[in-house]
Image (cartoon, rainbow, N blue to C red):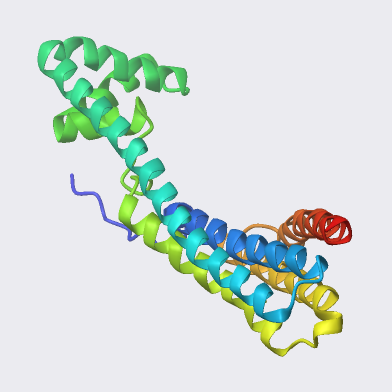
Length: 234
């Protein structure tokens, strides 16, 4: 009997998790770390040129650090998944019947009748045994497979874009009011980033904006306090 194929038209966002996480992390860190550095140096009564040098140095160092960190982290995840798949392929070769029972038990624990669970396991393993075990036993799916280069490039690029925003404010803001203007503009940038990330991922926008602006304000406030204290002592 032929089964009519119905195209899957629902739009899900889980396939965006990898690059969205790296992009949001990179942009948020770029905005916040550079703005905090600028505010801290400016609060120590440093001239505009020194503030700009510190900001640019923070941008370059931060972008490279983000890229290297993401690449190493995601590569480690990919190595672990590959090792698990090699182990699972070996188990399938050595004990195929046992792997059938293991997969069927997983489906029983999820609510299927034991007889139906056995049939599902047999059909899925006949189609692609390794893929079935990777997905349902190991939790590895095609949509969530790690991509180290993609994550590294996304983090570095978004960090650089984020870091450039407070640097542009330094170029146009009057020196006497540099700290409050950078502080206020950064809060706006962070709120916009939180809202955009929530919109892209389908999450509540207000909660995301409040969360990112709260921690951003706290970080910049502490950095400004340290810079002012250091400037007073020196």
